[in-house]
Image 1 (cartoon, helix red, strand yellow):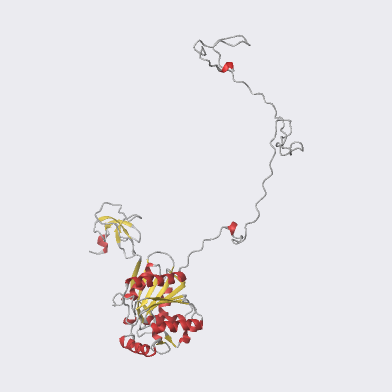
Image 2 (cartoon, rainbow, N blue to C red):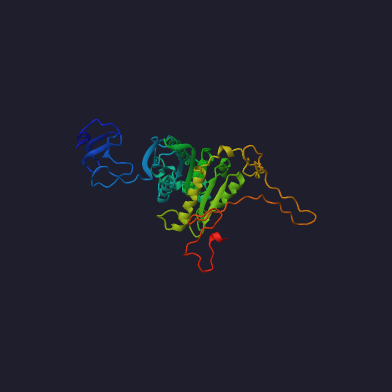
Length: 405
C-alpha cells in the first residue's frame, strides 16, 4: 500500500496539515496529522499526549532525553575523506555546549559510551569518534602506539602516527560546533585511558577547549606541549592502578611547572579501567563517585549558573557598605480646633518645684459636665417629684433601685 492510498481525502497534504486517513501507528481510519516532511501520519493528539478520538491505541510515549545517530564527517586526515562518528543530541530545544569524548584505540567501549550517555543526559551535545572503524587506524597501529607507552610510561605525541588522531579530533570539533542547536562558544574534552593522553595533547594545541576531564589518563611526551594549556584539568585515578599511576605524578609536576589548573581524585582500592562495566576491576560505588565528579567538572565550566540581574534601584548601592543614617521623624502637626479658635497644643507638665522635690504640681483639669442617664419612668409625675416604684420592687428586701442613688 502506497502513501497515496493511505491519504483518503487530500493526497497532496502538506507538513502540519490535518486530514482524514489511516494512522501509520494504529492503522485506523480517523483524523490524522502529517508531522514530518516525509508525510509520516499520526493520530491527532493534544499537548498532553492524550488522544482526542476514541481508539484503543496507547498514548504516545514521552520524547527520549537524547537521540543518537552514526554519521560520517568530512576529514582529510583519513583515507577516503570520511571519518565515522556517533553524535548524541539532547531533544530539548535550547542552545547547549558541546563535548568531545576521546575514546581508546579499541573504539567505542562500554565506558566510552557511558561517558557519552551521561553527558547527553546533562544537556551536552556529544560527539564520539570511532577510531576502531576509521580507515588507517586499526589494531596494528594501536599495538605500535601501546609499545611506545609501555617503554616510556608516557605517550609520545610528536610522531607521525598520532597526527591523524589529533586531526580527526579537530574535525570533530568543527563538525559539532556547526550543528544548529550547539553553542559554539562552549566546548570541552573528556578522555579515557589512552584517549586521555590524546585529549591532553589536543587541548594543549586548541585554545577553544574550555575544560578537560580525564579518567586514568597517560602522560604525554614531551611534556613541553602542556606549556600552552590553560583549561582546567580534572584527572581521576585509582590507588591500585599499576598502569597509569606514574602519569599522576608527572601531571602534577607539569601543572606546577607550566601553571595550568589541575585537580586530581584518587579513589582507594580500585585499579585501572574501574569505570568499564565489562572489566573485572569495575567497582560500582567508586565508579558512580568518579562519574559524579567528572560531570560536575564539565558542568561548572560549560554550564555556569545563571546570574539573577540586580534591580535598577539597587544597582548603584554597595552591598558591603554600612547602612546609612535613618531619616529624621516627621514633625508632629497640631490638631486644628473649632472654627475661629487657635489650634490646641499638647499638654506640657512643668518641672517639680523646690517645695516639693520629685513631685510635679497637679493642674486642675477642666470640668466637663457628664449627662445623667434617665431611668425609665413607670408613671407620670410632676417635675421634681419621684415616681413611685412598682409594688413588686424594693419591698422589705433592703435593696435600692437606681433612682435612689
